[in-house]
Length: 390
Image (cartoon, rainbow, N blue to C red; front, side):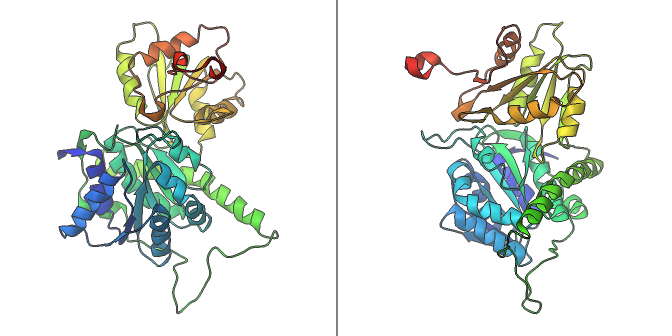
């Protein structure tokens, strides 16, 4: 039955349905509503778990790391500077192959200080070794959270569920919250093969010499590549159970004969869908929603881009001094095609700047420009900047 829920409340309910035993949290906008809602479920007796209020995000990540290794299903959430403060522990969690789920309520990072949405926070830790799944709406955030636990526990890799701060976390949607019976049938009780046990002592995350470090990193890399099959499988099984799917690694919408596609990630997909409805007939455009950024589904993206003449990549983050992050990875992937499309890479919506519907005709107009392959922030107002910075 559909319920009108704020995105944060919906995710809190999804987490509770997964029966976590330990939750550690530290408040940071716009993530706070998620853990506030979970703490209320605990206080009301609707969720039986240990809720640990910690003194920092570093501590939150450390607590759930220890809890998961000790045999408890665990959860945390964060945003922006919080995820940067967690960074050291995020690498440790992934390197030790500890199955955890964390929500990143995406927000810009400082400086300058901004509390509004973009995806520079999660993109900044893209190489930490976590699976990263991006959600286009709040129903996807609910379903992906539940799928994330199964993916994490089957692959022994942590999963970061990324949802756009405020745009999703603070927005009411009609959400089909699954039943406890459905989630229990999908997600078996937590088990960790290398669980710490004083009767059988072992060490995790210990020092290794150069004789073994490259093998450890190779193993981790291979595990992430192999996780693609589990991400697809979890989504298919969830569809069979609930009738809903979140898109596996990526999804393609639009006319099959279109030679122009826009690849994007996160909630901006909804804006592009609405913009497509206002586009004059005769301009067929596909939308490609990238759900899994790590692992990056290179082969699936190449298949999606066959026959395209132009691929426009629109993202909410970039690497200063280089260019788009998703765009560069997409460019490298499609370059292996016999007839690769031209790739045009743009960032928009940084620091919460609104992305209006006219973004679509503006993106398509760029295709007519002679020098259109250069990365740019498409909604920047250069008049606000000194000449030297334009």
